Length: 431
Image (cartoon, rainbow, N blue to C red; front, top):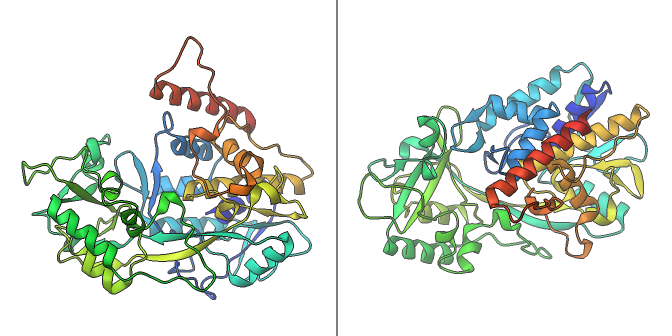
């Protein structure tokens, strides 16, 4: 996401770009194709509400900046209530086609194994950084790269779901159209079924870590078994919360609900929302078929776990996203310590613009911290505490506080004030 957006932004400013992509020649655990901007975890860009949601505001800013990732996400969106869910393969194909067709962009299918010594470079290695390059980064920074583990949710064939048990409904019927209001499959559980499911999750065989690795998960993408280990009710107050839904098959309110979100435009694939897992494959099929409605489920993809690498950006990067010790190198995307497709792409947008501006003899200031993009870059390049630095989604807690003139604001009014202020500031920054 970040590398694709960076290339697009730089080329749009008239600067020639070479994208170095090691896939498909060198594969990763999580990727299936050699397409640029392949989505490897969820297919959701989360909320598209640009008035009261921080990630929705980030969508707005990237669209305002001519972002390719948001253009393609919008072109290949799927019904998902108030969220922006994407048909993942056509999305990646669209991004790849646009980049390969641009006259100033060249795609070189090769692995970069060390940090280059000259030229302007952006390191945007996505959710996985190859071992050789990671070692080169460690050598250049003089510090160990931090790491956390990211887990992938399973995908189910829609026609294998028992719709006499499940039903279609978005939580709180959210969405402007009937299609959006019925964008999710819902599988209900009573208390006994939920308790048996938790027991099975806790007892299932799990993926083991390699020697020297530790399970430093990002809280926004915890495996379900890790959530279950934190308390038997944790899942019921998380991805399995039974609120905002009405089961048409029964007057009895479910004790817990498993939601599945459409994963492709045809509606043939659905991913199990929030069900990232490190259970072994055999255990997954047994455990997930305990879910009412999924007893005969066929899986297009089972869940998995992979290691994500990120650097201590507050210590290592300046406010132009350059490596302090090697200013010809910028970092962008998840490796900088942002979390999420949109946040990663937004950092690519900034890195691409800043690198191009420098090549053109200009100095591009970061967006002001009142904007979503500016709040993120401020956080990773100095706003966060270096000793405890961890991956972060965009959120209003990263923004300078709103002056509550005339007394306290309600939450919705306060969020609207944040987005109004941000849009004005970002528009001014764009010029």
